[in-house]
Length: 110
Length: 112
Image (cartoon, rainbow over all chains, first blue to last red; front, side, top):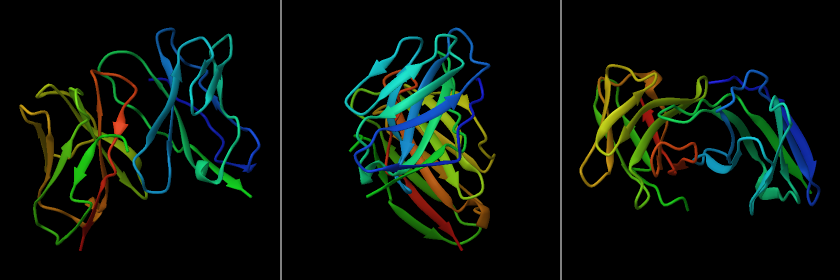
């Protein structure tokens, strides 16, 4: 599985958009980009995933660059409850494990 | 609520003992995954079962074993416990092998 690089931490004001970047320059053509988050000591929560096209769901939007070497997770209106560690994971199809790196610690402040 | 349940929530035991952690996947999910999260190691994949069969193994110690039963619930057995086994243990499930895995609330194991 391709490795990912994320900033260690980010801050965001409540109500503003949080844009979390991820670099995955060695991603292969059949590998997806997944985002998870973990609120303190809770089980990780699946957010969104994509292959090439931008994706949006009720939680977030995922923007993948045309060369697929990087992506951005967007939380459009961050709330205090979005404070968590966000993990960007690249995974192919088939029986492969999720490899969690160190993630980005997002702090949303009033 | 992810639909994945884990018991017990907390477990405190002594070194050398053996414990069993239980996981019930979401209804309809055939794959179950076990992960360990300790302070110094982060989230580590241990093992995956699909419809009762072991499908993938990660950094699981020989002292640890798991199984998935016909009703699809899974158990993780940890034996000869050491202080370093203290961690959060998460179970996740998915329909088949998918990256969209749904995690339970975890079992916090403390070995004293």
